[in-house]
Image (cartoon, rainbow, N blue to C red):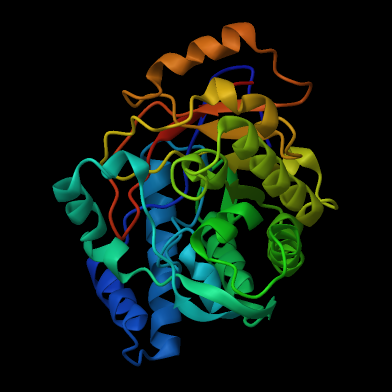
Length: 328
C-alpha cells in the first residue's frame, strides 16, 4: 500500500452506488429472471469506468470498481462457489430485537430483502473462476484512463462468508472455515497478482458479535474471532502483508447499534490478522469516541489505521459507510 508524507491519501469502504438500470438488472437476476450475460458484463464494465472516474473527480486517491458486479459485498460468493444450495439463512440483529417496527424497515429494504444466503449443504469448490478475472479486467481498464494513486478490490473474508452462509455440511466450524479459505484463496491471490490491493471485508469480527455470536460471552466470542482470523491468515499466507487491508464493520444498517462490541475489546485480536491495513468506522455516533483507544494501544510494527471520517446510509447498492483516510 502506498503511503504519503505530504498529505493523507483518501479511500473508501468499497461498495458505491450502482446506476439504476444496473440495479434493476441485478434485482432481476437475483429473482431468477433470465438475464443476457454478455449485455450485463458490458454494462458492468461501463459502470466501473464511470465510477472510477467519479472517485478520481471527487479526490479519492485509492479507488476501486465500486463492486459494480456484486449484488452485495458478501452474498456474491454464492455465484462463484459451489456448495451453497441449502435453505436461506435468517438473521437476528440484537439491537433491533426491541424495535420490531425498525427491524421490519431494515429487513424490508429492497436490496436486503433480495439478498440470497443459501446455507452450505455440500463440499465447497470454485464454480466460476472467471468472475474475479472480469472484475480485475474492468478495474484495470478503467485505471488506464485515470491519475488515481492506487486501486483495490474487495473480497469476502472466510469469517464473513461463515456469518452469512450457515454451515449444514461440514462437521465443525474449523473445517468449514478451512474449506472456505481454500476456495477463496485463488480470488485473493489473483487480485494481488494483478497489482491491486486486496481488501478483505471482516464484519464478522465486529458485527458478528451481535448477530452470529450473540449467544456467546465476550471471551468465547474472542475465541471465535481468532478462529476466523486463523482461517483468513491461512487463505492469504502467500500474499505480502503490505498488499492487503481488512475492513471492520458493525453493520451499515440504520439501527441503534447499542449492542455493538467496543473496538477496545477486539482490537488486539484484529491485530493478529496478517494484512497491514485496518479500515474501521470512526465517525458515526456509536464509535466516534473510539479514537481514544489508540492513545493507549500501540500499533504493531507495519500496521496502518484507516479510520472512517464519514458515514452514509445503506441499501441494495451498498452506499459506502465511510470515506477513510490512510495514516502514514
